[in-house]
Length: 110
Image (spheres, rainbow, N blue to C red):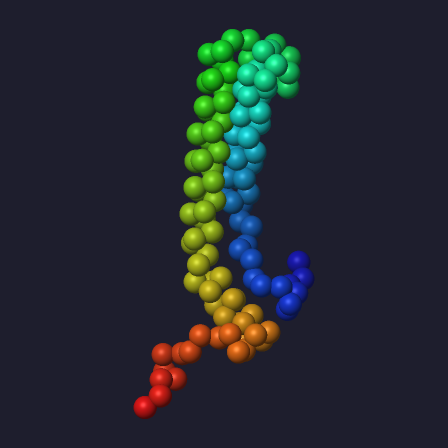
């Protein structure tokens, strides 16, 4: 993909981030399926599921747990790219906004 010099750098999409994003979407679907029972009193997204309050609560709670787990893993994977992202952002600032660069440690006045 082409990198625009006018756009700040973004994290790379890795296979792990993609897999965790798919798990996050699965959790969201579980929440929607479970919550639909509370709204309509019957399964509206998937026919005949959930059929009881216990199934609706389990589906909704399980979906929330999966969503939080996946989101925390996505953030962990993005944090691993911290040094690379900082270097790319410093290069972006130097090229597009040199007045906003932080002072270097070796540029201290004597």
